[in-house]
Image (cartoon, rainbow, N blue to C red; front, side):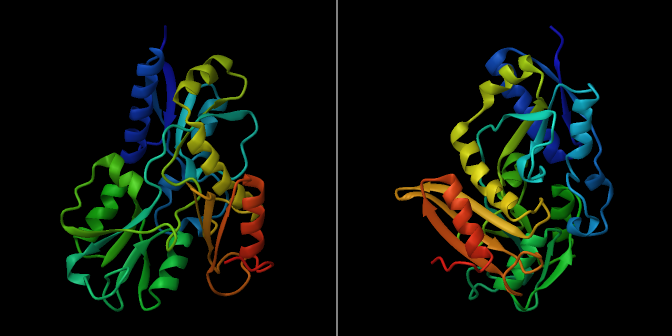
Length: 307
C-alpha cells in the first residue's frame, strides 16, 4: 500500500510534530506516511507582528491547500494556529494527546531579580514575543518591561536570547518539550494558567484531512483523544464567541477539577471587543461547555461580574 502523504510546515517544531504523528499512526494502523513540506505566509513574513499582517490561517492556509489540491492526504497543525471556524471541505480527523498548555519565560541570567515574583525579571527588562496575547499579559504583570518583536523558529529565538538581544523571551512549554531544547543557560519559569492562560488550543495538535476521505478519517480516529478535544473546544468556543482568530489577544485555559470544568481567560486591551483599556480576566466553573463559554464571554465584555 502506498504511504499516506502528510502536509506540514518545514520548521524544526512542525517537522518534529509531524514525524511523531506519523510514527504513532504507523504503530496504531500499520499505515506509513511521507512528508509533504509546505511554506506558509507566516513562515515568510518575519519582520512584523502576526496580528499586524492581518488575515487568518497565516501558518495553516497553504498547508490546507495541499489537501484540497490532492498533494496530501492529511495535515498536522499546532491547533492554536488554526482559524476559529472549521474550513469547509476539511475536517479535524484527530486531536492526539495534548501536552503542556502553559507558556514559559526563558530569562537570561544577567536579567534575574530573584526578589521579584512570580517573574524574577529586573526593572526595564527587554522581553521578546510576537504574540499580541503575550504582549498584553506582559504589560499587565510587568508594566516596566519593554516588549520587543521576536520572530523566527524556536531554535532561532533561543539563540537570540543567548546572544543577549533580549533579557527574556516567552515560548510555549509544549514546543520546548517536543524539541528537547537545551535551556541550561537560562532561568526557566513556567507560568501558572490562572496568572497567564495560554492561547486557545495551546499544547494540542490538530490532524486534518478532507471531509470526504472516509478511509483517512477512519485511520486518524485511532489517534484521537476525546477528553483533550473537549477542553480544546471550550477554549476555541470562547475564541469564536469573541469573533477572533489566532491573533486575538486572548488567553483561555480549560481543565477538569473536582467541581467541574474550570475555564480561565484573559482578553487584552488591543481587542476591539475588550470592555476597557485594561486586560480583562475571568474564571468560570461548570459542567456545560456552552454555559461556560457564554459566562466567560459576558464577563470579558464587562456585561457580568464573575469572581
